[in-house]
Image 1 (cartoon, one colour):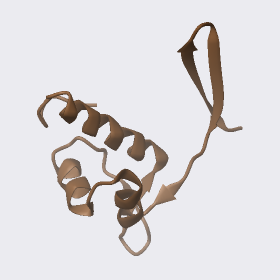
Image 2 (image 1 turned 45 degrees about the vertical axis):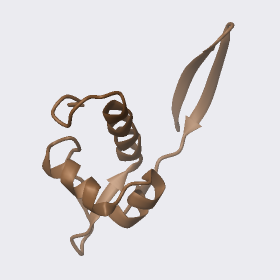
Image 3 (image 1 turned 30 degrees about the vertical axis):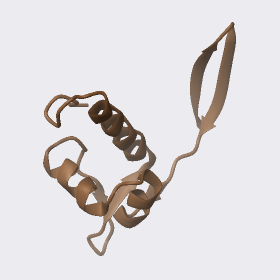
Image 4 (image 1 turned 120 degrees about the vertical axis):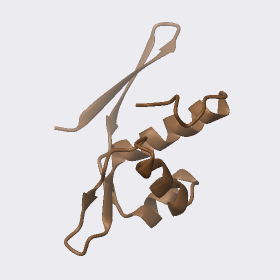
Length: 88
């Protein structure tokens, strides 16, 4: 069963959407997030991201939740929070 996202959009409207799950390598995640792989590794080293799973070849293997977390961190920085503040 897919994960469902419930979003209240105001005026008694509730949007329900199936949340697509995926796994990607760091380059694909960087492209999807608009960040560099170096930034993602840096935030990972700072503890802002959980350690990703690894492929058999040792590559980082990120899940769809990581993209949401990267978006949250970027928005937190835009709001003026430092790297130490947005511990998620």
